[in-house]
Image (cartoon, rainbow, N blue to C red; front, side, top):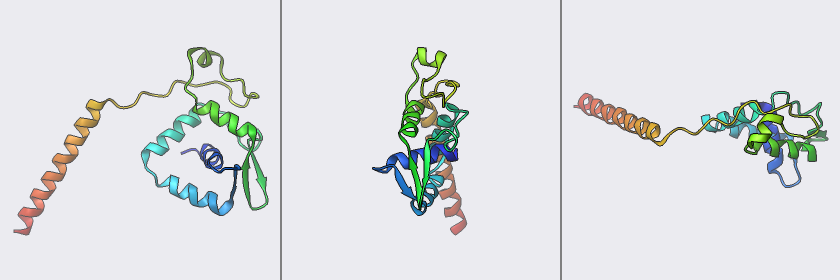
Length: 138
């Protein structure tokens, strides 16, 4: 997971863009334990902005008791989350030079056949575990 991307996402979720440090820590703890999907998503977003530095680029302000996302921070986050068109992939976004260029398109989602196979394997493992438990209990 990318800390700076997570900070932008959390702050953008608050109505005024400001979050107290306690709220940020709580939200980060929740997201850190949210599973692999969230980690993969933040990793993909971070890959689209390799030179991201929320402090030096003025994307987040430190205020007394917390942090606040700036308008530029919201714009950069929108660019990171947007699906790149073919022309954008070649030239990169024009958001005050904060993101040099897109690295590569977002990888495709797993195919349904893979998910079905994994689901079947998981069911088989569970069935075998129940069988072993039943045999051991006898």
